[in-house]
Length: 187
Ligand code: ADP
Image (cartoon, rainbow, N blue to C red; front, side):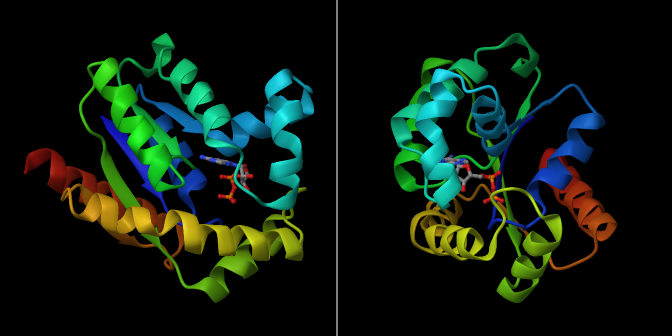
């Protein structure tokens, strides 16, 4: 099973990816988590990414693509993976297409978490992560609107997009996700 979780910051992608990855042998790959860890350890990647993450801007595609290429070559991804926070623009989505064809892997299923923007801001402020101050949140939502929302159309055209109502409670979203995945597997 290979999945892309698409949706705005605060949509619940990470929460649901964790739950799903605990239930089977699939790797949860959160680009935000990888970047925050790299920043904490001040690795070369972390040093390059830091200013972008702090400002709520996208880290340059070349850095992210290198990171994903390495991560998808690791053995724990062999039985499946969930990409959480990637791709975030059309160029990354094209980069992923190329990478998957090199790795001889099929196209992933895309799950879109649809959430109202007033709910997003509330959730993000409550989360209180270091890059979750009001200004950064506002910028991340703007970047999402301009850079990431075109991917909804991009994947819808391929007919591989499932939309979920992410306004529901955590367990309701988990149930909807299970149902949606069951339907696609048996379809
Ligand atoms: P959220 O979805 O809550 O905004 P993430 O944890 O997914 O947070 O990402 C945090 C930050 O990491 C982003 O604001 C951005 O700076 C950087 N980042 C994560 N994924 C990518 C990506 N695919 N491309 C560019 N930058 C990224």
